[in-house]
Structure formats: structure tokens, C-alpha cells
Length: 494
Image 1 (spheres, one colour):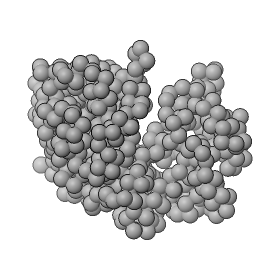
Image 2 (cartoon, rainbow, N blue to C red):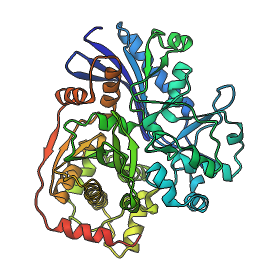
Image 3 (spheres, helix red, strand yellow):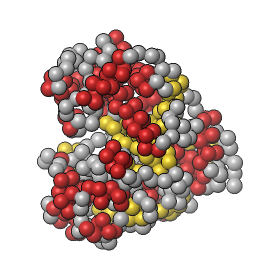
């Protein structure tokens, strides 16, 4: 086996995707972006969908660029995406319609309907998953109750990354880490929760076989390989196919004294743990136990993240403020008065796309706070609220595990927001280590390198990531106003 290798990572997020080349030289990874493209919901007659055919076209364009630029054969291809969303295939293997977007309103009110059929605590005892109305389980129940004909026609259900792996290889399997986001997996047995699905009268024969991260799904279909200019011998490898699983796999220095934040459109706050934590306290705190790489679990909670600022910036651009780049937004926030207005990032007010600044102003007015009018005040409100909500979750996961958290390790695109990172350090009184930015792509590639024998363990992979990337450290600056802000945030009536 050659000491060097080139791996291709298809990394799809809720707001954008890219195809990345990861070059392994035997000691370090070097990343090169081959292709980047936007992603987002398509509104069709009031329903939100993903445009998976366009995404497939973009993926192929990115993979083709590798073939056009490099003579070396690719050592592997891995696909990771956001969780919970899925596609249905008919008996001929064809896609049944455009898959729904997790923010589609079709699941509004579905949790109450589910709990009428199976009590909330019973679902949690099996799945150990946080209750969010767009989890796959509830999306399927919504379609069943609305008598969606596609559900009757479906032969196979694939989670989003597995759909693209299927189009590459012709193999229909579901990777374990992304399956664990569905709320259809038994957290203890790591198998489909068929008993729960039977109670909810949901189809079980559409569930594809599960595979572990690091498994070879298959080789490129000859027609696909020819179109892309790649060898049909290239293996498609199930990475941590849920993007958070790949991101956490690549966190340098992650240990039992560290919490992580995968920071992006969503913030995922938690700890890596050797077993699921399923008890009354975890249920009360609504924490989730998602599958991780290397026989671990990600005890975490989803928190609305930089979506607040992304949507706000889109609104300002619609209003003609094209001049507001991210650097200017942060500079204006830094100059604004601290801790004047706070919001609960997870309030229903902020879930849907639209005029986010108006939603934030309305929330602050309704909760009796100063209403942020300037751009700087609005951005600072979002960042301070996100920092406070994040450290509340760090304290909660510390209580659930009984392990003292000394360091918060932040990875993902949010690591570039230095003001937010400093706020998290200040609000928590803990050291923050931020980086790498490209944790998801690195984790994807790292799992491929382990699968192909270029690395021998997760620990070795994390060390290689540490040697390949830079990280920033933030020391907490004492300020008693954070404690008051935390108490104020917790008391908000939402």
C-alpha cells in the first residue's frame, strides 16, 4: 500500500456543499477545495423540499474536477450530510419525488400526535434521542397520517448521504451514525427500532441494512465512473455519514474532560461518551444520544446556531444592504452595548426562513426587553444569546456524565467567529480551543484513511488532524454580567 493517498470528501450542509480533496502524505492531511455550491430549501406550493438532482449534478462536477486535474487514482470517496432527512425509492430504485426539507411545515403538531400513540418516555427509552418534530420518525408519521401516496409506493428508505452513495454505487445501505439521527434506531442494540415502528404502524420493510462507519459501501458504477473520468475500482466508503459524526471524529484532544461544539448553521453541544445516557434526567433535559465513530456515542443537544445571523444577513441584503459582509457585522457587534437584549435561539419564533431581524425585535418586545434596532445590536444579541445557551448545555452534559468539563473545543465554520468564541470562554469561565474549521471534511477523510489502512485508529487520526491544522485558544475574561445574563435568559417566557 502506498504511504500517500488522495481521498475525496463530499460534504453537504444545510446551506452549502463542497467536494474536497484530502491529500495524505503519511503524516498530515492537506485539503483542497475542488468545487463549492449553494444549498437550501425550495418552496413549492407552501412545502419545502431539497433539490437532490441539482445536488447530484454538483457532486459529479466536483468529482470530475479531480479526474481532470490529477493522474493519481483516488483512494476513496466518502459522503457526509446533515441528518434526519431521507429519500424514498420505488421498486425500480427510482427517486419518489423531491425529498422534504426538515423545516417543512408538514410536521407541525406531529409530536402531540405521536405521543397519543406511544408515550414520550417510552420513545426515549428506546431511542435516547432529543425530541424535534423533524426527526425522521415524525416526518414519516406525518406522511402516514396525511395518507401520502408516496409512502405506499416506497420500496426503500435511504438517509440523505446514503442516497448519494447509492447513486454512486447502486448499493442500498444506511450508515449507522446518520441512522442514529432518525429516532428510528434502538440506541442500545444499534439496530432499527422495529418494535417502536410497529407501535406507530410505520412500514418496516422499507428500511435498508445498516453498515458501520468505515465500511466499504461498494465500487463506482461503471457508467458513473466513465462519466466522472474515474476508475470503477474507486471504493465509496461510509464515513461518519452524519456531518456531526465526521466533525467530532476530527476534534483534536477530545477527551472525558472536554465538551465539543460543532458550530455552524446549527450548534451541536455535547461530549463523546462510551455508552448512551438514557435516564429521567437526560429525558428531562431533552438530550440526545447519537451514534459516533469508534463505538462511541455523542451525548449532545442541538441548538439553533448561526442560522440566526445567516437569515438576518439575507434579510438585510434583500433590503439593499449588500455591503454587510461578515467582518463588518462582527465589528459592529463588538461596538454595541453588551447584554442589552437576549433571545432563546430555539424559540419557535426563529425556526422558519424569513425576516429574522423582525422576529428578533418582536421577541424582545414581547419579553419586555430593550429592542435591538441597529445591525450591531442585533448581531450582538444573537451572539451573546448563543454563547449563554451553549454554556448552559455544557453545564447540563457535565451533570449528566459526572465528568468535569475543563475545556470547550469548537470545530466547524463557527470557529472563524472570534467574537462568539470569546463570548463562550467569558460566559463559561473555561478555556476555549477553536479549530479546525474544516473538521467535517477532515473527519470524513480521516475515516476513509482508517478504512483503507493508511491510519490505524481514531486516536492516530486525531493526532494527524492536530498536526495538519492550526487552532486558536481563548482564555476567559471575568465579567459578572454574564452570570446575570444567564439567569435572565433562563427566565425568559417563550
